[in-house]
Structures are given as structure tokens and as C-alpha cells.
Amino acid sequence: MIQFQNFNDYIALFFLIFLNAVFEFHISKKKYKIYDQARVGIISPPGYWFFVIWKFLYSLITVSIFLYGWILSPNSSYYVATMTIYFIFIIMCKMWPLIYFEYYMFKLGAVLCAFIFSLSLVITALIGSEWNNGIDLRIAFFFFIPMNIWLLYATFLSVIMIRPMCAARALIMNGKQPMYVARFDYK
Image 1 (tube, rainbow, N blue to C red):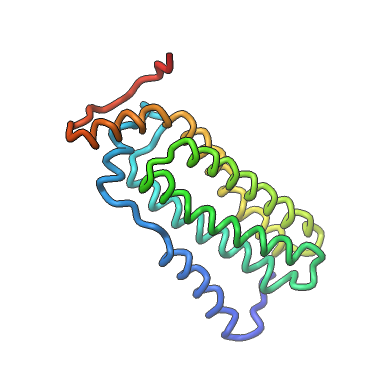
Image 2 (tube, one colour):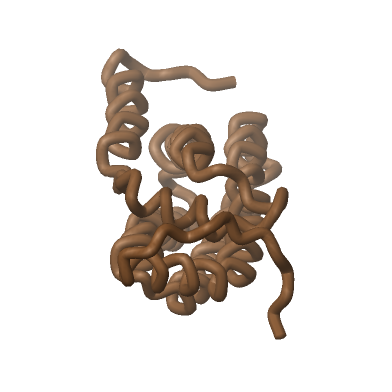
């Protein structure tokens, strides 16, 4: 099981979780308003859920990478690759809300979300390659699974929301109050 060498290991874990929380881009109520107006029925959750879900997922993957990289496998043959891909993954995750909600690049946002999902799968596979090296690495592997599931859903949601988001944005930019859009007519 996890055996921290000293108090600095606890501080490092807390610091990593704290950094993920601090550097999260906050989407203004105006941006949530655009998303909430463009929601497609019951398959898209209310905008305020995303903040809670992402905080939980970032905490899980931070603990996962902490277990994998800083405590258990610094001599792993995949260590450098996993850490490099993880940092690219985090940067892409932090860029996605800016691209999607701040710059209104919905198609690019959907492609970026698919790319983030693929990075997440690669990280999970690299962590899983250490499966036989202890229970802690199995825990690290399972802590990354919810992120994969969420990113698959987020990619699906990003793709189906392209048209409704464009419509809601156009109405808001023209000073009109959009009505709730709940339809699947993509003709």
C-alpha cells in the first residue's frame, strides 16, 4: 500500500491537487448562459455541474499521477512518456474551455475534446502497463477510468452541441434572449 517517505510527500500531493484547483479556468455566468440556452434535452447537464465534475476528476487524476510518478515508478521505462503526455493532457484540458466558451470555436473545441480523450486513453494504458508492480499502481489505473468515461461523454456532447451553441451565441450576440433549445433536428 501507499507508504509516504516523509511529510514532504503529503505536502507534494496537497500542492498538486491545489494547483489543479487554482488553475481551473472559470467560465462566467454569461458563458454558462449560452450553454444552458443551447442544451439538448436531458443528455446535456446544467452548466453548473461541470465545475463540480471537473474538480472531482482533476483530484482523482492528480492522485493517480502522484501514485504512478512520484511515489511508485520513477524508474519505470514509461515514466518520461507518461509524465510528458500527462502535462500535455493537463494543458489541453485547461485550454478547452477557452476555445469553446471564450472564443466560440465549437468545431475546434470538439476536435480538441476528442484529442484530450485520446491522450487520456494513452495515459491510462501507460499506467496500466505497470499493473503487475503493486496494488498502488492498480489504484492509480482505476483513478484514471472516470476521466476516460467523462471525456468520452464530453466529446459526444461537444459534437452534438455545435449547432445549438452556434445558434444560442448568434442570438445573444444580436442582443436577443434565446429560448431554451431542446431539439434533435439536424437537417
